[in-house]
Image (cartoon, rainbow, N blue to C red; front, side, top):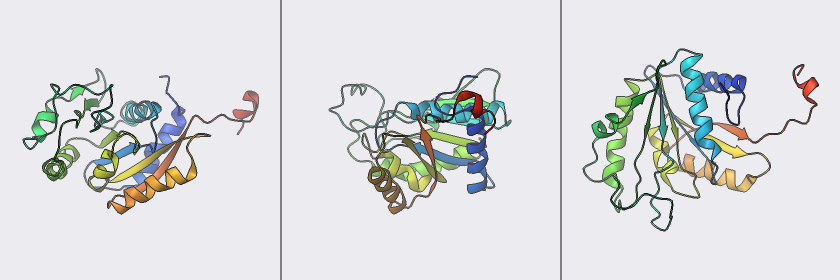
Length: 212
């Protein structure tokens, strides 16, 4: 497997770090969220899910939540004819969209866009039930959330997941921006359990890296 952004060994360490930080009797739900737009977040979340399922024999659900945005001015968002969360939000509707990756205990699904959902309160009231149902089915649920600069969904979901992991780009993400997201996640009632640094460039020569 060729991973994106993190080496296989780093993904294994990340899995074990999450398992140690988030002990649970049922499945663990974690979200990866960045302060600013970063396309690598989906790759890192999927790669972590893949490694956890294929190498560590876990039943894993990868959730692509990067489309959960409410800004109607974004031309990349689906149109209003696309499915939305609404007051009629039913967790079973989303569960029906879960598909399995052939040959693995790896499953995947996407959250629909939030565009057009004017009142998020009814949706958020159903989220705990949805998360609990997922915990009963999977060992690990990994959510790739939209960046905080694009939508507040990561902060809104933080109280309902077991822990959030910040995804920061080396040499690009500014410290105050990362700290602001960390503080927002904590203020919402969520727990920040770690940081993933992407786009790192090792300074040691390649021949020396294998000895480090």
